[in-house]
Image 1 (cartoon, rainbow, N blue to C red):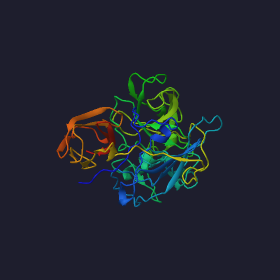
Image 2: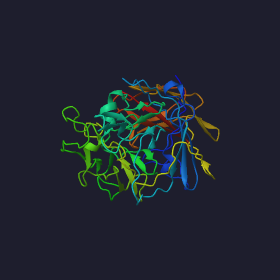
Image 3: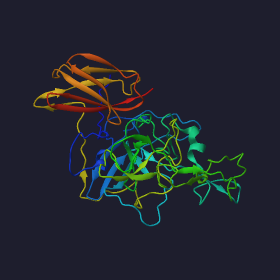
Image 4: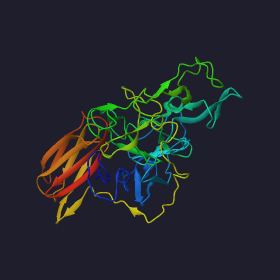
Length: 408
């Protein structure tokens, strides 16, 4: 068994470490400098720095969870060495909206790239065939044309090795939990947060019933597609992102796939994007962000030199902590876990440690009290949904946090 050394930055709806100078756009990143993912590369986010105006996130774009294989896709993930810039005080763009172009348009909270709904091909009316590159109209829907190459986490790598998700990153959070407000699972490059699929039904309250956020884009019934691919029998509606028409009031979200609302992390209110899925958890256009950003976006976002004075955000320690010569030491395995999690409490531990396990929304799902040194324990997780779970060990004034991944 291998000791887990992952550090978790924040729990949805919970504060593990108070700091008046920080906020969710600093503390919501999953940091790690030891745990490896695909290819043995260091996974998740390696460094978070911030100044008065910006947050800088350093990442390889490699997730901790297991990824691959990618049918029909010859590309493989490789470290991207991104340093991404996010405004700490994002603002609405009151001018012409900035389009979400090809390539990374933000980062998931584990440092993986977010891509827009397009696959990089458009219909050429000149050749009556698909042509590489974005067009002014009739751009291909990535879910339709590249979905076959998505892995079980709904991601895949592109030509330069940038592993990314066009759609709901289902291995990053519990997308089946419709009873709790989804956690922050990323940030767009305009600095506004991206939540999972569920939010408060009311956009004017930070409490109340939870509902799945519904896109306001509706599939057109117009089959003419002027200058576009024909016949519809060969190229069904939905093949192009342009087949979806924003219809105000058709759903909960605006043309950018977000809304101004109140959330657990932003009780005073914020604009926020939401991942969109249907009742069967299938991705729904525009998936993450709409065709354009809501906020102001910088000209360079993925290879930025931090402008100081910048401060490094230090995450709460996990795994082993000493306070007044007292320790909590343990081994958990396997990680990821399918059914039973095996826990061994080191002989040097204090007595009567309590373990609480929370899902990604902050709901406590398991409690084990009175854990004793030199004792092995088996914890049944077989009936829990797939996703990320937080372990919190507490005893005699010592508090340790850790993270595990539940897979099917």
